Length: 437
Image (cartoon, rainbow, N blue to C red; front, side, top):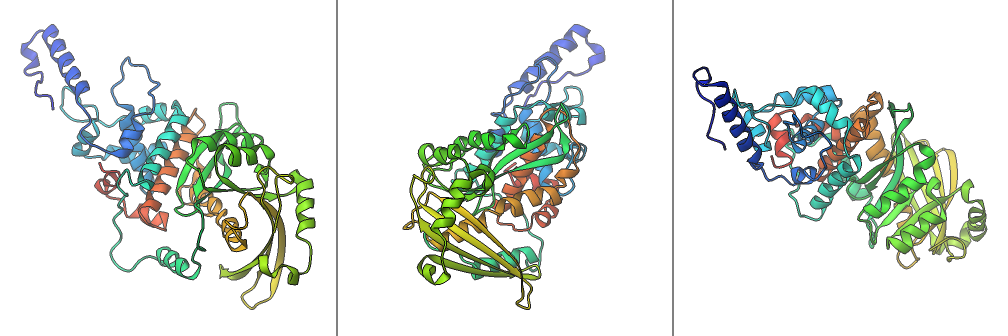
């Protein structure tokens, strides 16, 4: 740390005082960040768009404070993030490499206005790349697994339910890693021209962590945005599940021919010919399909559900890279056994029968709802994203990216209940320790 400091300024000339201040500023700038944090290393790669004139606070410091604040319950707005950051201890600020006031010797937290300016003018693609890179580092064991202190006593309900479900509904053998991809509108936020902020994200089936995110101008651009996002994700040899909006030949070719992955797609009105062909291939009484049929029963939330899937082989003549078509029937009923609704959908996959039978396809299709249940719902309800009315620049997307980071971090730590884990991080030091700070 720098040892020089301006002493007895009243006894020295203004020129000497300015010289001392300039020397101390240079020493502070030359100081390396004292903490080795994988997340901070990733965030340091985000380019700083601010003018160098008058810049005091490192961009990585502001982004790291935002990331840690978003982990904690209640830090769901820029004002809340700044308020949380102002209570950061001097020791932590020193480890972060925060700006040190040359007159008082204290490390300073950026102002609320500084947080707003930075978040509103970020390279949002670079921020998403840094965050997804950190998640990938943890999954590859290149970075420590986050640790979140747990409340003493019995495990909370969601944690017990998650453990019980793994025992009652184990994944079938030979399952390939998968990811679900879908778009979400941040309903309270608006772009500069008054349009909605619409984000497309990919989430891991197994871990529930967000693998990447990008922004599109409106919902009509979701398909091209998804195709732009996929090459930036590490999805080789994975199974990608997408809804009917993404069932296009361009997406199928990208996944199978360029990414070396597999797809599971739903066939609806936008692919009427392929859907009609699948319907014809899968028509017949149940007795004719016993060898290629799987049934999965489940109950919860006051209802029972039966998912029956049958499969048939196909080839590239139906769809690029296609190897199977399937028909999925969902029956929902009351706990007394009376069925109340039925839905039948058709789909197509590049997975051959020897790699994925009907049991596997049933699992992949069910796992696709991870994107709704474990991402969109959590951001809407736990993080109150749709209540946010941020409209300035990249701020809406930036905060969505930090929410993705918080969700991924908590899941990587092995916690099932996001809200419960956030309440366990009310202590400032515990929140910083999650990222090794």
